[in-house]
Image (cartoon, rainbow, N blue to C red):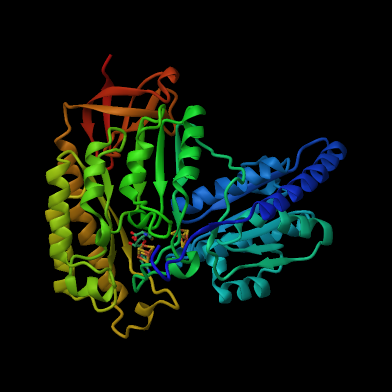
Length: 478
Ligand code: SAH
Ligand code: SF4
Ligand code: F3S
């Protein structure tokens, strides 16, 4: 091991056992209440933000189920409400404040209601100060690093009636062996690493999620093996930058190796992953995607901007040419790859010329889909101090132009699939329908078709007969 290398550790078994003890105490408490009230205590969790947060919420749900809570879809019928928050853009934060304000009325009519807020927003001291002062109906505030402590925090509120705030600055540890309750059975999120070391100049994530920490290969293998036994068919490996997987582990662990190991697990049909940072997308990883039969032909490779100058200011550590070179290499090795990206419009200092370079990259890369964002100023990040902020009008105009270009490309790519047979993993009924089923291709395209319940969880062939910008329609091939 090289000197100065940080090594990720696990939260001690003793600490995990302590949480299990609180789980037992609260379970007992909930049973007593249920006997008197004639119904079980209920929770609702609302998740803002990315898939990592969704996965964290599944952990919160797992702990709550063990404590005897049952899930409740209706906020106003819940005994415990948790908001798992996001702060990546300002509108994500505004949404949380709006919802929090609305809870005041519920608390006024039900003094027993417990309200908890956690997640990325809580890692900012000014947010905690604001909530403590303005939203006094909140009972528990905790952060991203001590999610596993929910049982203890809940127990404190139940036994003392006091408000609890517990947010940690950082952690080098990962809590394993805590319960998890997933909403979906066919597909599952599996977090393989936490945190981010990249400090892109616009981004708040490294400040609120801490440094990169990888889970051990054995733990991940164990989790995926269990999922396979439970009937799960598709896993999506999650990390802010999965390409850095293993750098903090002792031994020779890389993301490519992780894919090769997980590819061997029987029962799993498909493996996806996100997000890859272009600066360290290795050739070995491209080969692993090409060679592993379960690893899907889909790569989410956020470009953020097409201008090398802006990329430098963003601290992305690649140029436009290097990025396009990577795309060429990927397409050469995996010709049927589905490509998606993230793009920020209106980063400080972005000129019309810079923006045109973004349009040029979008045309050349030919993404199947792009997630486009208006730049949002995040206090504490270097870009927020940049005096050359782009005006809202200019930003919105560029955003529209980008969307128009990308939509035409998405439609053109989808058109190539007209009349083709595609392999679809059937996920379930499509929204608002009793007969239309939905699933995805290996390239991650949504396909809708007439089907039957027995197909859920199966791989089927569908012949594409209708093209839309965001999805395809087709007929089952018997
Ligand atoms: N770790 C991933 C994504 C993290 S956040 C990656 O590096 O790609 C998801 C997306 O939000 C980013 O890719 C970026 O496009 C966008 N984003 C992050 N900070 C932002 C900000 N301040 N304003 C607008 N978009 C932002
Ligand atoms: Fe944010 Fe960059 Fe890290 Fe992604 S890689 S989470 S954009 S700092
Ligand atoms: Fe948001 Fe935190 Fe994810 S800031 S995007 S929920 S890592």
